[in-house]
Length: 402
Ligand code: BGC
Image 1 (cartoon, rainbow, N blue to C red):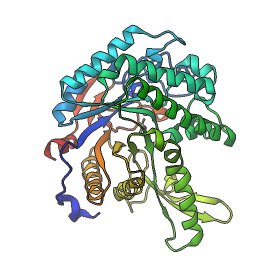
Image 2: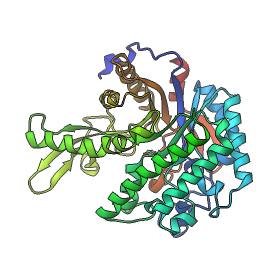
Image 3: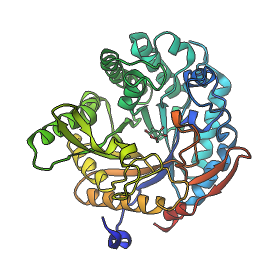
Image 4: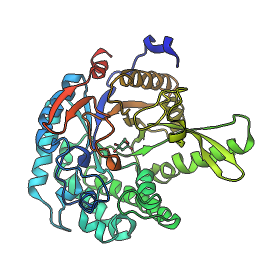
């Protein structure tokens, strides 16, 4: 899309959700019963501390969301707060999340709730996490418990956030807890995450037959580096299947909607010596090129990719929510175009039959960005982590003007 498309008019269906997404550990602060916190204390990851103190400031944050013009929020519930010790459910934590969810409703925000957004209670991490059948069972019980105790305050359920990102960061690249590196361990965790989603789906439905349950799947838009090269095209087909579609295929009978997290695209090249080369991941080498816009994460932005991914998801014949899409941009000079262009391409996909029901920008306030700590700034709202002062970024005005 070029400059002239900036002002192109587009319309979104009535009732379309425009929201922001967040995750407990990235904003709440003091989540000291989870595996991330423990790894942080061991010096393996940057410390999150109080982060944006959202645990105490949720009211202020949701009010900002509403004033920005949003009508929905996706939050996550921190399992380690609800079940700090195996089998011991914490009434105070449940009460807290009930207040949080009620406040969202009061402000007219549709509520999507994620049950697993990368963190685990430490007791579970110590006994093998979600990589064991016991872990899968524990997750299903947690889902059941939340459905029983908070179900009347949840509009949309998201079981697991980005299963294959979790699997590759924690079990292949060894960068996130539990810091494993191995092909077998990654295959095992993917299978267990599929089982965890499917079982959680079933237990939520047991309690709330009408609940709308899905997962947030991070899909990448892949293209062959050399458009007409047979091998480049072949690897794109293979990587697309395993990266984007495999988990969706395994969970489609236990999903009421598809959640799509879209951040970047990748051009794949087959090289006889190096195998599959991801041309857009070569960040350092390309960091100083100006050929395409690039976020502070080093990711190239490519709004058109969301259109192709949405059309691909049509085959599942289910409603789709864009559960995350965002850009790290402290200077705030790219964010508004980024959002507008992604929404324009989304509107085009809707015109062509994709049943997209909503869009959640990542994220409302600046956050703790996992192993990147406090560097990248994704927020519609800037946070001064020393004083906890919030300041709405100019780009956030786009939602009011839409
Ligand atoms: C994750 C978020 C993360 C964002 C930006 C997504 O993969 O769900 O937790 O902050 O990407 O990196």
